[in-house]
Length: 227
Image (cartoon, rainbow, N blue to C red; front, side, top):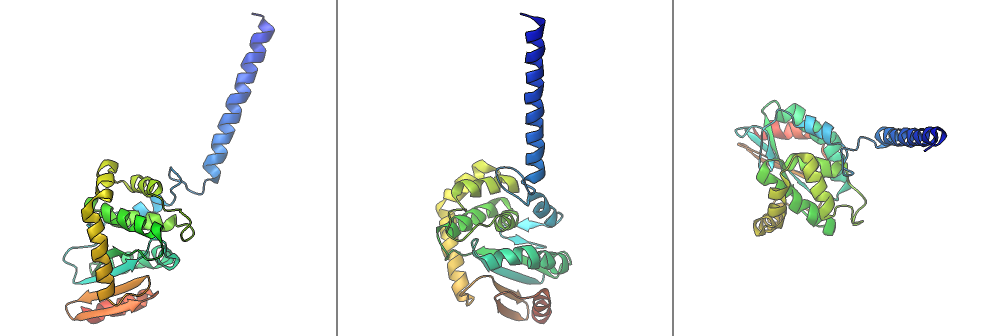
């Protein structure tokens, strides 16, 4: 083997390696905060719930005097807006203060993706991570009935949320999870739900039903009145 051939081979290898490094750097810079498997926003959402106790579908202190229930469809764009702008305010100004706890109840009426998402967040309740998964799915929401919320993507989002996937897979397929979805629909109907998001504020002095997109001031006033 000639010295000239060796030099050319090494030089070519160096060029390939440099190209791969450049491609990797570009991917890291341009992925918009991708946390793996096409799931974005995970770090921010994880931080949002840091230090808050979760039990089932509820985040906040168990003995909080008021419960705020949010009904949502995982494909609802208005629910995604609430997840981004309103819910962080609820967590900071009502849940972290101990004035209220926040419960998410999924409903599914927009299409098949809605049902997949609802079953996923109900399955996550068994690991006390419903809220993390719910907010991650809303942060990655696609067009309605476009097939964006497949079982594979729900599973990727569950992994990103920190769920044990073996347990999640079992719970996602469980009859009990399907029954929980039927129960959620009945709760939605009994709470006069017709669209999402739909909020119900319950306390020792009664309840208030707040359909649509309330402001944090609307919810603070409702919490005060039912406390």
